[in-house]
Image 1: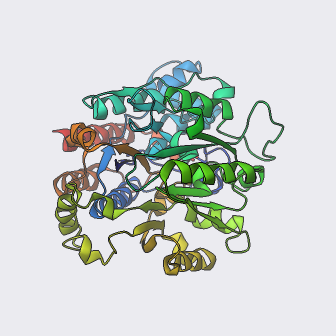
Image 2: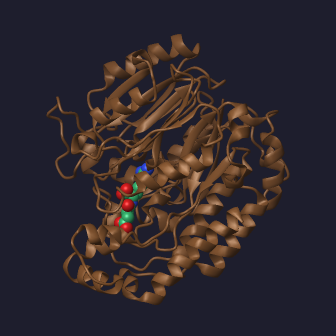
Length: 467
Ligand code: SUG
């Protein structure tokens, strides 16, 4: 199995609406000016780095904004201009929601069950309903279409409808799901993390828990996962109250490595023990579980640095699979190296792609240095990436991507127009440089020229990639 990544390109209406539920970065940047151009270029650069490590890297295009249907459904009437002006006065959050670029956080787009893991041998995608917040629920049908477009020709790929839009089934996608597997990627266990369960009184004090256990159960069933392969962990309410609105802000995983904060899960010791035992018998190797204590990385610094939202990648898994060829191509374009070996990585190593904030916060940087120096885990290198615009809305490197484990023959059937190549990167960059706004605040949405600019940029970006 090969782990492909799909990153969502930031849209031209990216702004700081303060809409992220329980998301302290989004709330603290509300109404400050954004730069859609900078945001999109930062995101592409991150995707380029990952592609440069030999990971098959694909892209989701931005869907069209504004979604004025939200305003009509809220009873605003008249022309587009009139509806927006009324809404700006009476319900400004609705205006911001219509122009949201939150689809850029692809980790929330869906949950994936690879064909190697499902009992029916199908590759399952379930788009997340994202009903916890104003601005994200319309992403579900948009992503269902995108997944269909990209994976439509993959044998036995099955794109489901999102779970029903009812509060007990609140779903935030792969940000609350971790797939642990052996080096071949064939033997996998699935860990789902929820913030609320109907049968439990454990609830966060300050913020709404965005993902429920009942939704996770539905996702596991739709993905045709067996009971013995699935684990359901309850997120620690203290973490949610501290601004950990998704599990990927407090835990991360890749292959046999699971890194989590000591306050990531609620009373999970026995479930984690069962997970470790199961992993050994399933994958034939021990799980490398790294628990980060509060003393090493206090919760506030975990949230400020977004260490757990780093991407953990195995460049070497693609050796001999055609991935290396890609790497040479892309690495050349990045100008960073001619081949994987020139990056100086050991062939069995894992690489962390961390937010730049981790470099600035001592506790996070020291933790990373210790992880790299420790021969007891496979992590042996780090790349720091600057994602200032996305981070200011609470989205780090891992939020921007969806992981999809594929067989080689499935990978070959994915629509290659969506794959990152030096050529596609160059076309996208020049479209973004030309068409994306340099600066945006929510009041700009009342300007008809600005709306036209956003629509044209979205159309031209699609043409730049697909012709
Ligand atoms: O849903 N921010 C997103 C960030 C999502 C991060 N994703 C993962 N952790 N996987 C959210 O809270 C802010 C939008 C605004 O305020 O304009 C926002 O939606």
